Length: 145
Image (cartoon, rainbow, N blue to C red; front, side):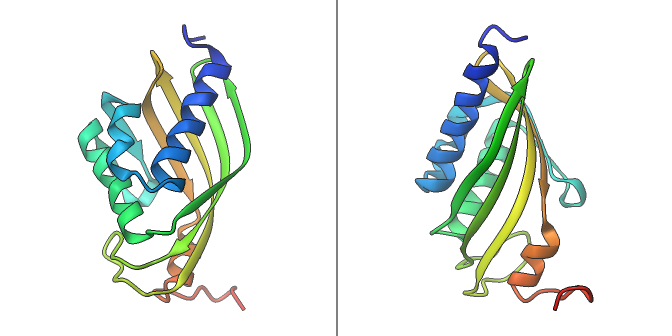
């Protein structure tokens, strides 16, 4: 268990998501991150370093200026916090090579955060990229009506 405790770590993650996503302060992301932190997004890749990860989140907020994240569940154990979220917004800018669509986009995510000394050291992002691709008009999976 960290010095900050499970509840303290949960508060940091909640504050990070509220400030950066809901209040659209992409530039604030770095203050929540340890310098050598890593964000891992599966097939999207891995981003290393607080400045680069902060840039990733600033890019999301710029692409979805009305972004909103709802935390459906949050729980921690030791130095890790798991959140189940729903993210939505209107895609007004490019994101990971997907040009602005002007469309409403919504996706679910289950993300795991590891914290150290009150700051985020790792994020393993499990976001529903099929929903993102569908809602942006980039790809229609055959099982989606």
